[in-house]
Image (tube, rainbow, N blue to C red; front, side):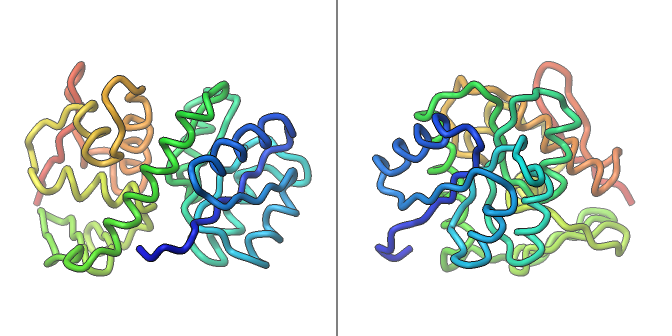
Length: 229
């Protein structure tokens, strides 16, 4: 990655939260713009695309899920979604419309900044020379690292960047059990001690897109990729 300053768009209708997040991200070296409603967020992304969007779910105009749909339809951009509602359905819908990660309010600006750094590290890994690889076929599952495409039984599936990385990590050692904490560290780049619910939600999203039988839950430990066919 060049020395260009990375830009983050913070979208939140609560001015104090938006200002606090923006101040922390600026202190971390990012350029930051702020939008307070859905329409202005979409317009800002279209007029001057940022490198990442921090997006609240509850917004006036139209909500963060609709904002995410619209900006991802124009040009894929990493999205960290913020939600005050801890309902699993809300989180899964957010992941389904193209969000890469989520945080539940209340959160600390320090933790949010750490998540943003982790997202950018993952983006850098995706674009590094040698980051591509030969296609992987496991039963009826096909993974093409070079084009970052996935299909099952010949049917393509649209995965977010983090979903692809998680699936590829599981597929590198099929049938082996991967602990949630290890997945957080190796796929997300997070330190130990953070919540593992993010892993659970992304696994549910993968099951919804690729089939409920693809990933086996090992209760109290983690997940394993099943190979069939």
